[in-house]
Length: 321
Image (tube, rainbow, N blue to C red; front, side):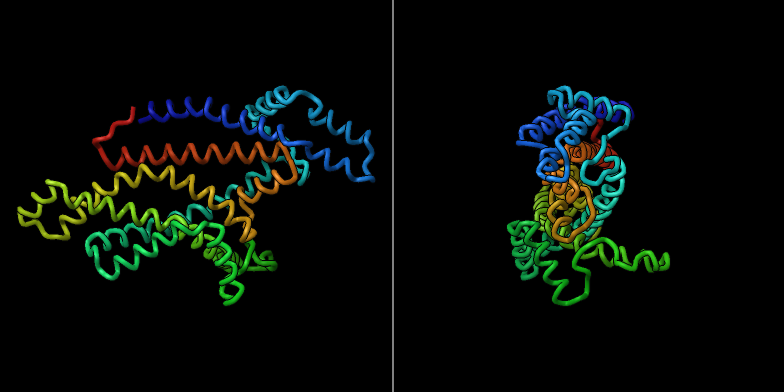
């Protein structure tokens, strides 16, 4: 296991190198940069712009800029944000925790709902409940995440039950520790539900399909013929074997949640990594874009590694080498 994890971490290095190299090159293909936008301000002299361009190394060819940025990453220096005028590492540390909180809560909600509902619809297939959930799952698969987020904001504005945006209230600093926790949960629950529902439909269909397929296996028929109780067959024989393919999808689920979280964060004004990347791209804040993409790539790779480890832990037949 340890050898496999070390091997995956070694393979992660060229993968991250390729992702960051392509991202840096695409960013440099865009016309202008952050300093070009500053040059439009008549209050800023051209001498100041040129001085800043040399200070940040933007006057050099982009491959040289990339190598210098990469050298800084090796020394845990993510650069400096032109927009926020603070180190990029500071911004990413603040935002990535919010994104992890949102995506992990959404994933827990989706899995807690998909597993029992998928099993129930498989056991009672072609029932009215199965048809209703099938319609719901196809609807959530068809509707984009950003539209669900817009519906969520509309629902919050109409009912007043949830905040329409942000992660904390205005008077957050004056609240007690318990009230601060409740305030964060109050702001978290609606965007997490929107993001979780966005991934619930496909997960529900996969659970149902895997369960139905496993119910037709010969060893399940043999277990039933031996007179085992239906609950024993369902939870001790069908369920453990049906859940294995779902664990392999965990890494892809994390990728889908991170991409969907970007739209959810923007619409709900949630201070997360996805919203930070969009703001950085719009302002052409080069080092902030690169630092955010670098962190997002690490999260995706670690998510896939976690799925492999969980699969090997649950199913002893799988050996990681």
